[in-house]
Image: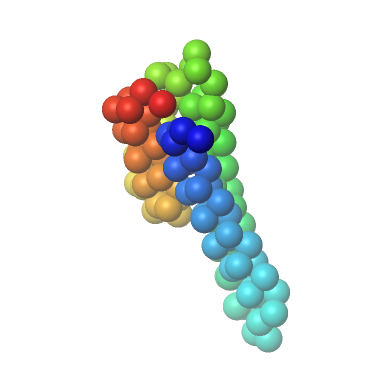
Length: 105
């Protein structure tokens, strides 16, 4: 099985979504009402920013759109890093885009 660059992007999405779900579930078990709202909203924001990587992921999967997907992946990754809520998926998007351009996989 060959290594593909979109594996890295998928891993970043799954890690960030996992953190988002953990925050949502820990927020619902909190006894403090303010804590429930803050932690749950933080988890929702993490889940929404994990969605930043879905379109670049789909572009990296297919062979004909791989080069444009790599460029879009790098751009969206920089945006994700700059908004700081999407830092995890942003780093993985930039790495996946660079790997796609470098390895041509």
